[in-house]
Image (cartoon, rainbow over all chains, first blue to last red; front, side, top):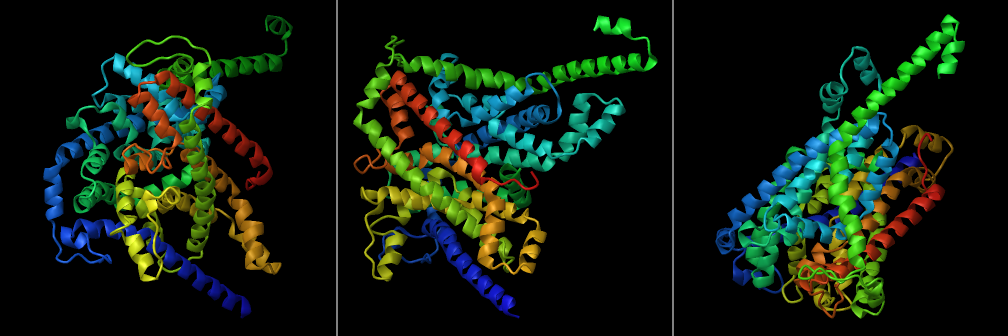
Length: 277
Length: 317
């Protein structure tokens, strides 16, 4: 009887802790949305009021007129979609090679890949900028898209860990049947790795959608700005237009939230693979 | 090989050699496949990592800027950095952030995951709530927290006021600017929480049952079963968290328009590096900074990896 009481007590504490934590995580988020729906006079009210009165959408309309929101949105979408395609094509292929194929130099290459993960992007940032500048890609979205087609070390690592966990029996059976290595990869192993591929794609999507330093370096022309860069510029020019900024912030967060709710399981699974295996 | 073949007059020996040869050719064949599969990355590695990496070492010994080719000056950039006050300030700020943020994120992350793991009602809802902030793009996160921490009309000081505390000037104060940054970074720790939660789910239930039979208390179970078996996951998050902390850029840059205000209390290492490279075009100097960052991160990771042998326990290994 006693352990049960104790357990219930623990559970109550856990519930309390979770409630407090939820407030910490949820309230700022709601505050963002609430501010975006408030009239200016209410934004500058002290003490702060939580519920917009009256509810108004005009911040959203004004924000999209104030900055070329839809241009930024389409720029962000193009960069994000193409670089995600790049990663989804390249990373599982390379990862499969690391996990399941035996080749001379494989372990060395894998160690190099892990080592590369440790290279801060700031080290390669300057020579890469000069390289892209030399071939005339600065001021275009290409430096933000093309490298993804050649693999991203973290995603390769994550996929490799996933492939390592798949049994060899299927592959051996297919091999005995005379299937080529690429066919085994494409028709057997890759479909089995679908959750990990989706996860890697999602991560890339999120990273690029929210990326700031990349666009800051390479997108020199305002007509090419992404949402992150656009919001940052807006903030540095009109730092007190909280209603408008919260409207932009909300609008650039919503697509990710929608994606998250549609693919929640993949999201959770993907994050899990990266940390567990 | 040939010698061996001459000696082979037994059927079994011939078969043995044949299978050995077959195995060798199979390895050679799949070796080619292996390289072919890995080819995109081999090219990417050379073009986007190796080449810039080595150029960057060279640049760090020159006065290179985008405007002039620069000349070789040996270790002068590094020497100059040692006497650069802002360089040291940025190191102090960065280490300050890492030292507080990384352990806090692990402690809070594990605690939240353990609470979620108690199979409480509404677990999925809590999990979603914890994860929500990680979906907010960093620039938006920075702008949102500037607003929350606004000394005049912000929600945080509003709430503090309601319970009788006069809130500080947060991002406007040298004392509070870095704690503010730690606070808002902790807001977005949903990802590690999910990883810890999955790690907890991987711990075999039998271990707890066995512990129950032995009459272990909750505390004993936590420290003798849960935490040791969670160490591989903690290890992963420690490495990722430390590396991320040293590369802090977007939040402080957005909040201070790249100025690191007030009084350079938010000038983080990478911000100063960025300024040198792309504001002052001192690309040689910035490359030297990048290399110092790289070496520090490598040493730190090496230390964590070496220490992991002592404190990371892998299940079934």
